[in-house]
Amino acid sequence: MRRALGKRVVVTSSTRGIGRGVAETFLRAGAKVFIGSRNPEAVRETLESLRKISPAVWGITVDMTSLESVGRFSREARETLGGIDVLIINSGNPSNEPATFFETTMEDWIQSVNLFLLSPIKLIREMAEDMMKGKWGRIFFLSSYTVKEPKDFFSLADVSRSPLIQLTKILGRELGPFNITVNTILMGTFDSEGARDSISKLAKRRGQPFEKIWLEEVVGPVPVGRIGDSIKDLGALLLFLTSEEGSYITGSYIVADGGITQAV
Ligand SMILES: NC(=O)c1ccc[n+]([C@@H]2O[C@H](COP(=O)([O-])OP(=O)(O)OC[C@H]3O[C@@H](n4cnc5c(N)ncnc54)[C@H](OP(=O)(O)O)[C@@H]3O)[C@@H](O)[C@H]2O)c1
Image (cartoon, rainbow, N blue to C red; front, side, top):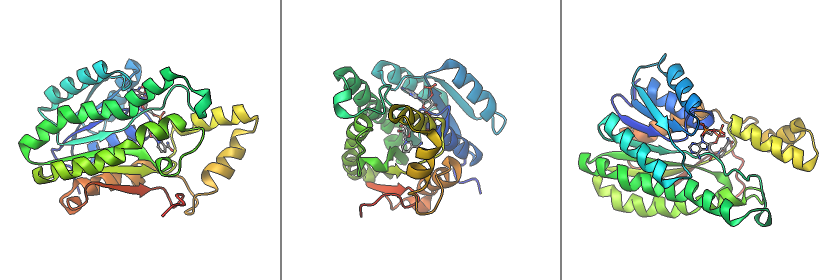
């Protein structure tokens, strides 16, 4: 079933890992998709590969730590797609991560807040206009379960992205009358270059083998015994929330984590 047929979808930070899997899911479901990331070669290669699935995919470079760059990306996406129906905000990671609080600098915090909070706000301020005009829309923040259970070494990300839960609630109320839903997904561990890179850095810091941390601390504690797949475990959820069957869910966070979150 092509559940997103004709929908105009933007996925940010989407040339690798989770964002790319989500972009592919929507493309296969019949959407027109706009992607982006910092590296021009990655954008080119991703477009080339995704166009084998459907030609309805476009993209440019964007740095989510720069509001100016995000503004350019937003203009280009709106012009190319002729408006936006679904905005899926994914991010990269701060350059100085993993780092505990006193290992960070003020520059790290400015970068992190731009990446996780101010860029999403800018994208919504611009793109929600299209959705309000069309009286239909979907906005998703792709976040992490660690905003509820912060990890010392993800201090930058966990602190910078946690206000999006408040924003989800506020926007859910303001945009509900326009048939626009707003939700945050709190993701557990999904297999990606980023996840493996993060564990490699941690392994180096601790002087432990990568495999030990991966098995004992990443895969081991997940009750369902595996880590997530961005297409099957996340893309499918986003497609459901985009469909009419998902239209009663808004202002919420949904945990997709194989059960790893301890808190109720
Ligand atoms: N994987 C997990 O287990 C997991 C769990 C919970 C939350 N998350 C969060 O999900 C997000 C994606 O994680 P991932 O594991 O898929 O990472 P990834 O494999 O490293 O992929 C990150 C993607 O974002 C792009 N990107 C990075 N920094 C960017 C920036 N400043 N501006 C624009 N694009 C940028 C990268 O391309 P370029 O390098 O070309 O920019 C790449 O396409 C991260 O915010 C991460 O914290 C991940």
